Length: 69
Length: 205
Image 1 (tube, rainbow over the protein chains, first blue to last red):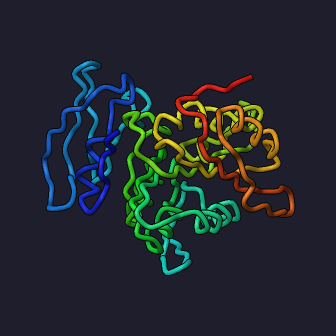
Image 2 (image 1 turned 120 degrees about the horizontal axis):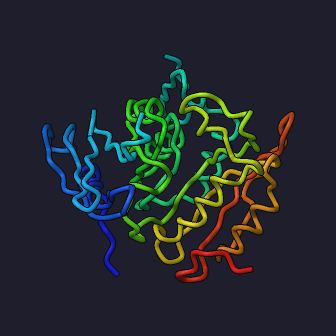
């Protein structure tokens, strides 16, 4: 069995293990700002649920919109 | 902003975030005995990020954490912890890639009248018997653990140490009590469980 390698590039590889919190489906990442190590801001989109999840200050916010605030 | 210095690590904490306390320190100390360099580690409900920050600064490990409270997620991030804002495992693909998963759950038995306003309630509220978050954790954790991976769970006499040990065993874990300390009002323990039964994610009664 293959496992994701969480190594030096952890912060970007981390994006590979993130899922939509509602359907657990794949997310499409739209990067707004990044550096060599991490994604600073952007959005994840779940095409199944048609929901957007923001990345703010380097923190992916994977809380369903109705309970986010 | 207050700060704690602990094992080569400076951890900041802020209002509306659970402040590192005896339970936090006990889990951290216990983890030192089980962590090996190179491990992939997940911490659920990291709060200030104390446990993850200290482990990251003392071992060559890869640690990611989750946290539902936005103030806590930002606090953990400021403590150089890789954090995902999500409830428990919700925002993670069920990939069995972690060697060790740590959880200091909300364990106080809490009625609706006793709930605290705001996100900080997630740090305390264990439901009527104090075990709601622990059940949710055990229902999901094996989907994220490598075969023979292990978990470390902070438990309290408020929600029943032996009861939770049996609960873990029913999910296919071989369980060891690694630390047990009595404080004024409660006894705390860290239960270390190795997942022995492949693909068993539901309790066996």
